[in-house]
Image (cartoon, rainbow, N blue to C red; front, side, top):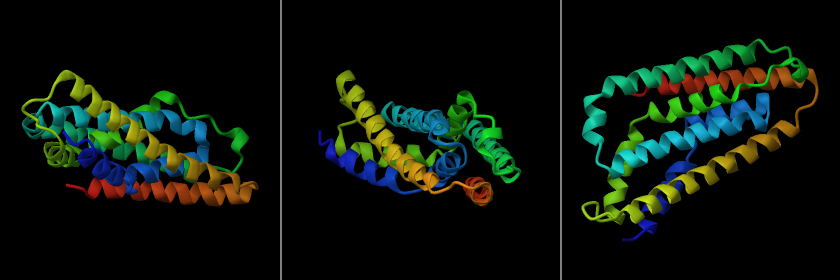
Amino acid sequence: MNIWLFLVPFAIAAALPGPAQGAMFARVVSLGAASAWSFIVGMVAGNAVWLLAAVFGLSALAVRFATVFVVVKWLGVLFLLYMAWRLWKSDGHRGAQQPARSGSGFLAGAFLTLGNPKAMVFFGAVLPQAFDMTALTAGQIVLIVTLGVAVDFLVQLFYLMLARQTRTFISSPKRVRIVDRTAAAMMAGCAGAIAAKT
């Protein structure tokens, strides 16, 4: 067992910005860091599901029920477009905004990662290089999932800190409107990128 052959590629892959990070960044800049916690937990949970699926060899099941993942993907796209629409309509006054519901953030983050079965392909390619998949013990499975969740969570926290620092530079309603519309465009772009993925 060589845990580094799993952790290093996964950390690099998790650190590469994608649609989920773009959506989370836009959410933090427009609604504040507190609004992103449930979104991040949803993202990490979605990746953990794919990791577990790869560990237990459920690739064939994912292929067989590909329609389910297509539906999940489109739910994520629709949610991002809804958030983009709300941000575009913002008047720039933070006090008037309703805080995002935690449940909606969790579902949005989970939909984005669960709607991307390429995570299964990544885990399926990397895990056999680090572990003997035919002889995994329960303890090793717990270790793999725990380390995977920890790495993923730390990477998303780094993005959260960057987004929070960006938000601190915004003060006037005019600047807030500009940022909200930029965030709306980012979210719509993320939705488009996800929709374009096959």
